[in-house]
Length: 343
Image (cartoon, rainbow, N blue to C red; front, side, top):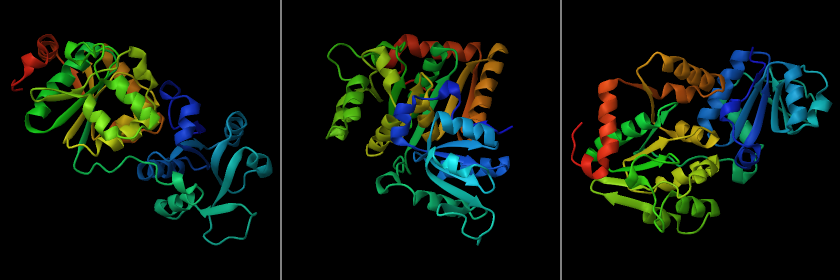
């Protein structure tokens, strides 16, 4: 049943070109599906941003995948046939051996499979170049990342985001960024000549010096509200990569904010990474039966793709007619009209 599991589902997968620049593909083959699941969860939790993990329990699906897409590291249980042929499709092949002390199999690496996950990860990191062993987002120990996402209603999502922003900004220093291509609130729209998300992303992708200064220049303030205006051209939002997210969050960790609030308007591997780094994720939907199947399908896909860590941090917000009207007020009145409001 676990014969061929991607670390991301087809609907959420980013282009291979961008992805492999940031990650090393780690394919793991073992006939024990539970062992695979727990090992993958440990590696993703302890080494975010290093490995893109693919799991296999069947030889046939493993071979089909390798022929179509060679992998960087293949961690494979002993006993599989045609090992020399398989070796040709991966940069490094490592045996998962059931014995802590076994006879030398070949000149290839081997790892004792039943040792603690920490020890297995340490062995895998030894196979990486020095500059790729610690790719991860900086520790945001005293800061909080909140993401808001909706599968169907942009209006509802944006209204809820504004109400949450209003609430958080009352007591804590909060920076709001919308990843909607076309926000409904006019104050978030970048006018000609104004600094906004497009300008910041350009310098971020160029890895330009002085990025801390640049992002501060892009931050707008209106009363208690601090924010970055949306992209100048809607398609720019879809050019954000996972590498951009990692570098962006590392940069944000240097700023003096308590909360970073993101409104997520699209789903790809970049936004999925943002959700992974979020402390809490609000999934906003209308209080209707028709949306239940859509929400459950989304959660099932995340779980199937190995993103149980995201599912665990999701808080479902089901808006009834009264709360929907309140969210609409935020959109109608804008930032000036909401200043000082108590929720």
